[in-house]
Image 1: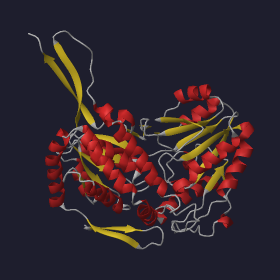
Image 2 (image 1 turned 90 degrees about the vertical axis):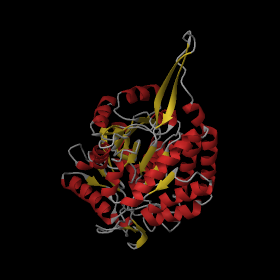
Image 3 (image 1 turned 135 degrees about the horizontal axis):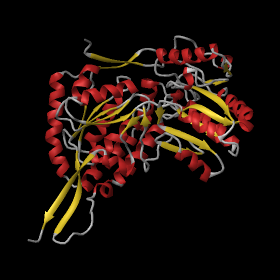
Image 4 (image 1 turned 180 degrees about the vertical axis):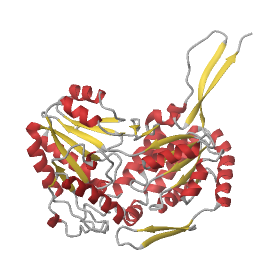
Length: 463
């Protein structure tokens, strides 16, 4: 078994990072340190915890330019876009810290003569956060910051593709003088990650990743009875109604499909367009997609970087090829993207029409810059097709009628409904999924409920 982590950069295929993997002794030491530190940390006033964590956020964002370049080398996002991840990190962290005291205050069920009753929010203990590479800070911050604010200790296991992200978290917390042991990270093999999640010293596991990974988390945590929050895959749909602002819908959904090279769980992967707008919508999306500049993410002029690895690009190509073989048409011309070559992670945007739900590209998760577009004749048809999926993370409606859009949203099997926007997490709203997109919740006041447990106090004060 390898004892070394190696990060292969999609930029040029070289080894960008090497780190030793933690052994059994190191894992045990981390869990023991976390367990001990958590007791004192939980007894620390919430305001003090929030202040320390706020200082860590200050330290983190001061290194935006360095972090942006590291993201580009590790997973391929253009340096022109990478600072946006730091801004998103700050927005979510500041919001969750700002509501922590209110979200964690005891619940008063109302008066009862002779009694004092309240429900307190008690921390779960030690929380393991298992984070992915595609948005390495935005996904991790959803759990790391609120888990710490709630009085838990955190052990972060980051993706082998983005190990420096875990180290940047640790640097920021150390600079802010977070108590030793309250936050730690471990570079782990898959086998040791599974053993970590089954350890009885863990109170919860927050996982972001694939459906198969989520099933593995459920199996692993059963050994120690830790709770688990799972943010898994997506095949997120959008519906452009006949009354939509066409220009806005084209711009918003093109970006929603291709930003971050389409490597987003909540990116737009299938679009249903009302018949009167269909031809113009398709023409507009193809026109915008054809203007993307595919190239090295280190070039400030690049607007579409490589996907994470060549195998991932070839998987998307295979989905496109299968759809074309079954009668679909691919509309973006390859001559605009000379770097798009099979066997490399550089992949041009793919726009497909004449698709239907018999094509895998309209049903299975596509983690790359590809989108299918279908014509629909009614709201009813759009709702049926949007719900015809094993996933349910977000769904977007583009319409000039908010009331009707909300009625459509009420019938959609999804965690978030957007109107006239897509592919965005508002930290004030619960981030959650249904079906194969996961379970549990992060962000918002509701997110704190999943990082704590209710503890009831029933005090008889008069005898």
